[in-house]
Amino acid sequence: MSSAQSREIESIQVLRGIAAALVAGGHIYAFSLLFLPPDAHSNWFTPTLGQGGVDVFFVISGAIMSIILLGKRDHGPREVGDFWVRRIFRIYPLYFITMAIGSFFTLATFTWAGAIRNLALEDFSPIFPIAWTLVFEVRFYLLVGLTMLVPARHRRAAIFLAFAFIVGAVLLGLFSHQIDRRYSDPIMLDFLLGGIAGMAIAARRMWAPAWFLGTGLAMFAGATVAFMPPAALDFATFRKIGYGLSAAFILYGLVGQEFRSGGRTRFPKPLIRLGDISFSLFLWHWVVVTGFYHYWPVMTFGVGPKAAVGYAAGSIVATLALSVLSFAIIERPMIALGRQVGAALKRVGRPEAASIPA
Image (cartoon, rainbow, N blue to C red; front, side):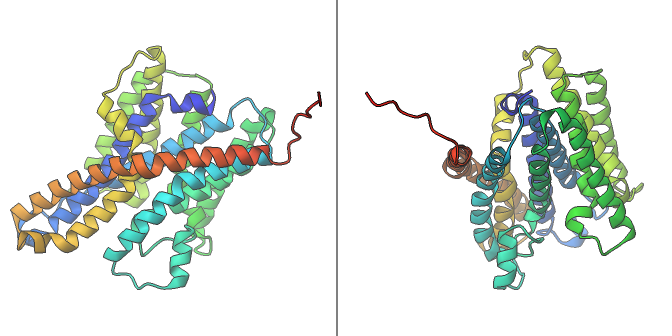
């Protein structure tokens, strides 16, 4: 399966949209509670669905990268350069814009050194905290790019070697605090779980997709309940099983159902559209929730239930509006420009066809 084909899998796009909605919804809910006095709402509910949305995002990234890597073509340095250039144009322009605006609403101390590291996604950002996920994403893309250099006939073995690198880094991180968290955090296992699902999807090996989809949904819902009191299962310990593995099951099952139907599965267009704007939604929602949190009491003259509901509703509307606009005027043009620059990079150094004089 080619990377072009992977973009045509509607179920993956739908999952992207749902993941972004989970993350944004979790933050909007958490911030809206700040407009209520402590005794006006239940303190026992600790939402983890937002973190679950991040796991879904990472699993999707792992799956898509496996699908790309298992293409039939060999990739040289130019193709890898094209891959990285496209990712740079896909991520950084929108990230720069949202971080520049979002930094006005942070309490972190600004330093030029810190800003440069944040801009490069070299470190976790105190200026724009939501970008911590991108720190892991760009490192995973570096690993994928290196794996692309392996000849196609050995690519599957190279993928397993990359998986072993991720597992090894995570295990070392458990026993030594000297290992950089950007490589050893257990959340990197989400890419591995998604990668395994992607390998099966690329090979069109779809075993009992309905069972995987149903089991994954049950696990995801069960984990959400188990992470709340009175059970209060330790989130850090069981996150990869509760959300990571269940997300991989859901992805594999949903795509399998779509394949089994011969492409006749039809998802609601709003969900597909939500998937299109998912990256904008992911970044802009943080700008909105932090900005509204600073100015909403001023606009509504106080706090309380009405302010909390108004804050949540206003945040949802503003986030969706900004995301739709951002996708149209920032993401789409930058994606197209990235394709052009990447294609030009692939042509560099290649001999042009000689023209024969008349």
